Length: 266
Image 1 (tube, rainbow, N blue to C red):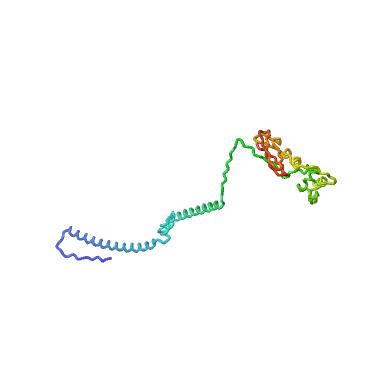
Image 2 (cartoon, helix red, strand yellow):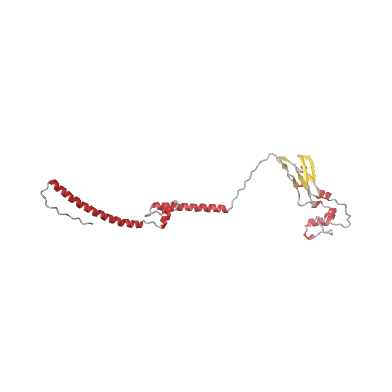
């Protein structure tokens, strides 16, 4: 603070009251001005010291600078310049909640993708009328064992794997008792004179009958039976037949030497 100097007032002739008042006011304002100037200098010094302290405390860190330049929403509010505030905690909680939801949804979508889901679309179309398909009924056991005769075993016993090349029962210990008894009786060819043999006649006679196999038949709301089917026995060639029944029925079948086919096409 600069010292205030007072200059002596020279002796002058007697002054009026207004002149003396003016002089005292001038001296007062001079003292006041000198004091005010000192006070302002003290304030400047104190403000300068405090400003330097605050400027040093408010100097942003590298993380704060990054958060204020980042495009991640809310990050600059979590790391603001200055002292921590409740607002900072709220922003931090909101950001963590959003990150948690993002991680949860990402994990759920990843698990769904790794499960390789697929959708199969099926359209059901109701048709008023259908073309009856060709139906072939075949029994895996082409021949009925109970219908075999001694002449059948003599000519086709080896073909059916019931007898060996010497017309004897192969491995009789493996056969069931009633089967073994039947074969023992039918395969006794002592003093037997064989008769003629027809494979077609054998297939039609020993093969399975549709009447015995069919339990129930229904087509387009109308009941059907074995009479509506035509049995076709084939050896090598193919046949096509027409007959009347539930309308016009075309029966065709192709089979091997040891099979009987039952087919119908309406």
